[in-house]
Amino acid sequence: MPVRPTTRQAVEVDGTMIFIPERAELETMLAEFGRPKDIKRARRLAALT
Image 1 (cartoon, one colour):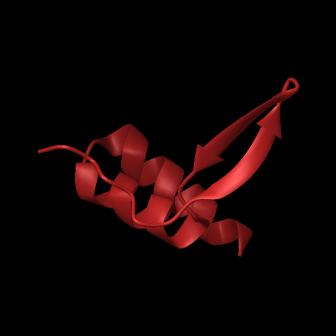
Image 2: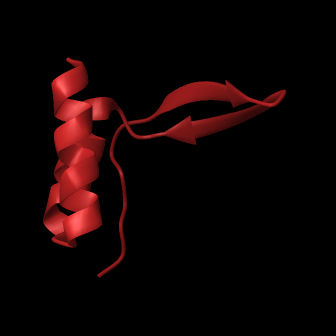
């Protein structure tokens, strides 16, 4: 199943602008992947809020 974020925010990395999903959407996406490393990352993101 393809991943198609519905939100995005601009972030500059090493002088290049990239777009990433907003934090809440990224947390949900990672949790839905279901892999232990993704679930761990989603929990870390949730702890930042």
